Figure 1 (tube, one colour):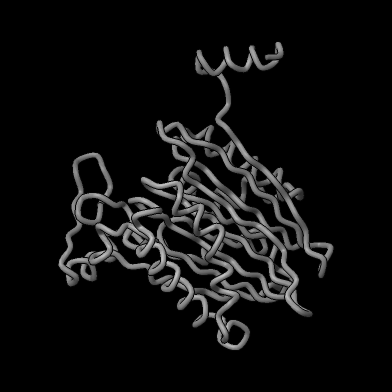
Figure 2 (cartoon, rainbow, N blue to C red):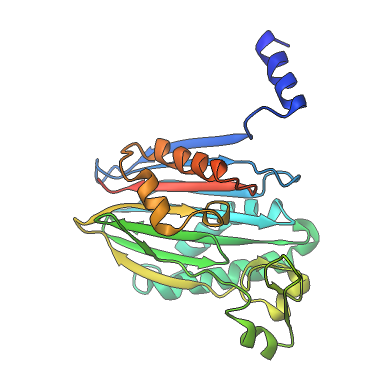
Length: 283
């Protein structure tokens, strides 16, 4: 073990080290102005990292797709990891992806969830939220989500949320119509059947009768006013508003540095959850 490694071990032992992190970046081949960067930080919740990201530009025939996603697991690392490996493949294999993109995404979400439930013995209990964004030929953005990971786009300095936070209180009637209930303990947030803090997610076989995996889907056009997009897990949104997040990184042109800075700001605001963030800059 080197001297540096020994010092790092000592820091970890007395609790003065930074959380484990992962980072990366990429860029479009179709437009030199469009870049992405991501950064993940393990939280202080006493469990292994349960956030995963997917960020990649992919050429399909004569088209280019920017594929971006945040998967935030709960009681599970295998399910968000499975989503990272399979969800976009399922979406792109839908026969009507190019002609009816929204319909294809909804169907792929349902198929993916069904497969996860069938593989519950191997993938284990728990589940995962997800927010996905597909950038088609640098012009059309299609966002889908289940749970409370969020997509926010910045246009002329103004934050606009493209995803929907699926909170149990907001969907109480639907949950109760399915035979479930929403319960809030003192000092806690409302939870489906007193357990899960989101009303929609992949997996969660024990709660599935009362839980939906149907995504909300939104479409946006990338124009001259569009500056950047943030995809992030709730480790950021628990401590920052959409506009605060946009203001925090608007002047940082390097997408990876922007993602890292946003995570560091969330940590400075005492976020203890796993934090994952992707920033896509549109030039």
